[in-house]
Image 1: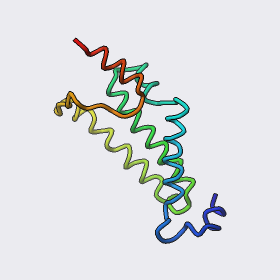
Image 2: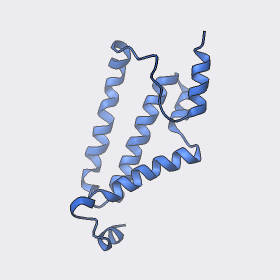
Image 3: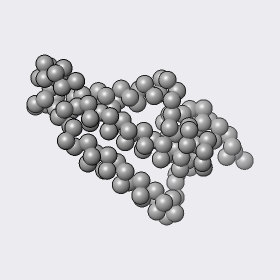
Length: 123
């Protein structure tokens, strides 16, 4: 990967981090179109919306880790990126306890799960 990046001159300037962005978003798109979802797996093993939030965060952290390790311009930041992604997870219990979620809020993705969740909450 390093040779490819060097041959295109992506190590410096405005395109620093290009490989990171390409890989990160590529992983998310592959997950979307393949139907593979950490959110769906966690929802089946725990309670609904919390699992969706945690699943989305974990998916992004994994995509960040893979992308940062593949991008030579971001490799030295890999640990910081992962730790920075994990720290906000610590706030979820506090947010769950003290923040009222909007009735209009809906997460993008996992359309079938969202539809089922909404149907299960209808009165």
